[in-house]
Length: 170
Image (tube, rainbow, N blue to C red; front, side, top):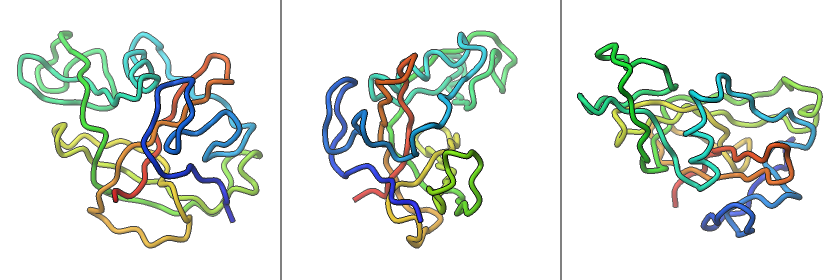
């Protein structure tokens, strides 16, 4: 069973350690996992830059106010190329979830089970994001439960990056 967890507490800025941010020595996922690669980088760049600063960002159509995720080159609602990146509250509701029992990568062989959640952001037009749910991998999970983002900094990676994980709100 997975024993990977991030301590509770408030997050800190990249390069600083706090109770809510993973240090270089301890991550939710085990060492050996490949770094996320979002291509094209120009499309996903504002999201990843935001995570490095512990900000959750999504695209929005400035003409209509419609939010969208994942990022696209054009607005879903008007087919316009005029999109903006906006910071949204790093909180949401569990929309769906699954408990993973089979490792998807050799580095995960001792990290199962773990929980994956689909988090709906009601304050951002209901867009949904995917992530890991921190804590006991055998915990009861309720649809509609409130969760908050935890920014897991991987400062020792090349290039450095920050993952968004989720934990139950307290």
